Image 1 (cartoon, rainbow, N blue to C red):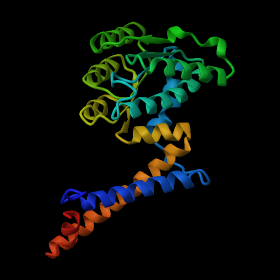
Image 2: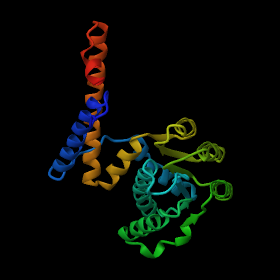
Image 3: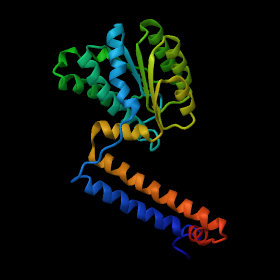
Image 4: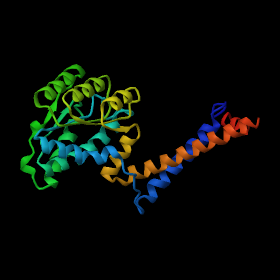
Length: 260
């Protein structure tokens, strides 16, 4: 009985190479700090906060109803969104702007509250933090209704939609446009990206959300993993490109290797 199923040997070899690359970049990043390119959506956060300060209106942040933190596909999005929330909270504290977070995630709620509280403490204004700045609504439809109601009543100057979104993305985005809010979006859910792109002024597309979270937190393991992932992409693109060229010349060595 074969240990490796026929046709998956090269996949196994590539997986081992990728694990080694990931570990290597995460290890050397402890000695040399990687930097991530400037992202317009992140650079727009101070502008969004400044707009709210000028208009005397609040800023709204919500991570979408993505699921639990232990969900392998949605959990990382929530953590990246919370890193962005930390940066956003600090900017709001500096500008004296009210920040309202509407959260439908019960397991992430304590982390979100502590993140905001710590940001106020870091800026030397712990007494200004109010737990009522965080509204918890667990189910999707009530969460959506509560968020729309907040927009209608308080007309936030800026909306930050970052995290794992489902159908609520298009509803929230259109509602934000209706009140004239500046909007920054970000999600790794491919089925919701078009709606956020259409309704937001700035967008963190797919893995940019994770890169933004790593850039803000400056977590060395996260930065190293992103560097390793970029190298994996380079390798895969190179293999694909060489395969196309050789295939056009009727040389099937790449296809044969990948089919091992």
